[in-house]
Image (cartoon, rainbow, N blue to C red):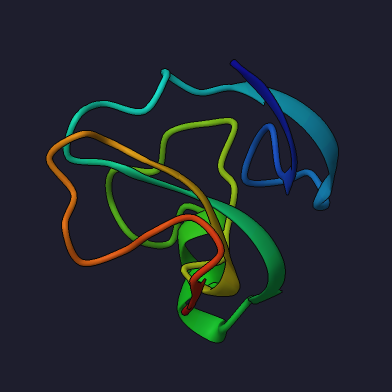
Length: 85
């Protein structure tokens, strides 16, 4: 599936809007519509490839808040409509 994101195509490029491809959610996955995303200093280190292993395009932001829109058939803790983050 295609989703909207903000990321960098290389360590020297600025963050910019982009479309990325994600796999479809599996039986143990939770799909979240993100409402808010924080980008902290560790994200900037990763985007700039100051830590080993950066894969581009790199989409920073691991601190999120959003609503669950779908859950896999093995998920029991969350349900569509739940606020998570």
